[in-house]
Length: 344
Image (cartoon, rainbow, N blue to C red; front, side):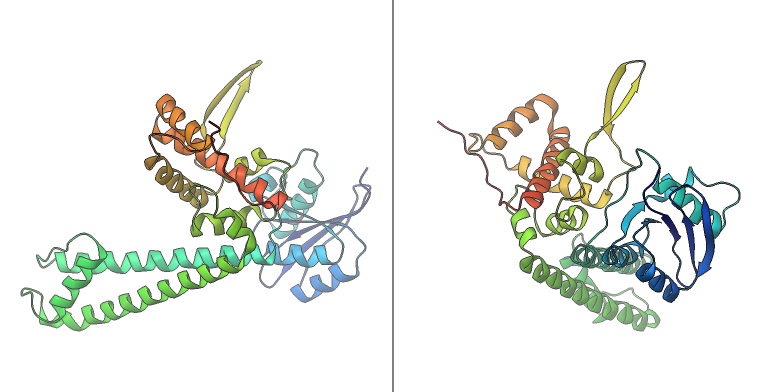
């Protein structure tokens, strides 16, 4: 029997569905209210289990509910779907969330702090602007290629070519299209300046963040990995150990067992955090690519033997796994990272 009520919340922009189940499992109410009414409800209702699906606004509402003494549980949408009965409506969704929140063995997502969410928002915005810059580059390259003008690889050669075409140093491009190309070029320069600005802002935020500075001492962890690790792991309190943290990121092998036989497969390419996993792999590859012939630390000795045994790519995944576990230990303990030298 539950000791408190369960409040299942189906979040939306203007109308929020709230389902309340008492500690005996009886449905008390299931109605739609406004965001203002939800704030009043969370402030006045007695301490309860407040559950919601993982979405863009769940961290804000979760922090608000937690500040009023509620037990906040964020559930992945895929896990909630298994408890959905009948047609997909807001009322049925809220009821499914409330039922899923009290199930034994249910794994909940972590509630991000405001600092974590800020770091995550800056990184996602940087990625968005970077994609826009790449899209502009490909568009201008394609327009030039339509008139037989090919561009060299790299941003430096591309910039010089656009300037030459606009200054009429390269013949063949129609005069009628030069104003359009100039507009695209000005937008490219503006986007490039904005990307540089947001990267500087991220660097300043990382420099002020003491946990990120400790994470950057780890092999293969730069600004990108440090910000993503902090945004995903926080203080490490949401995980019991490093293995849970690495499984959350998606750098542990999948397990398949049947009839007492257990087999380990490759990492889950669908689950986890793809962006963080990719950054960790690149950082691990840079470390493995620069391994010395004579190892100076125990980790270098381990990597050298691992590369000989399983190859570079698998060694990169193993190092990414170890990096996440190390990052969890750093964040959970508050201690700095120290490499273990080889004792002669």
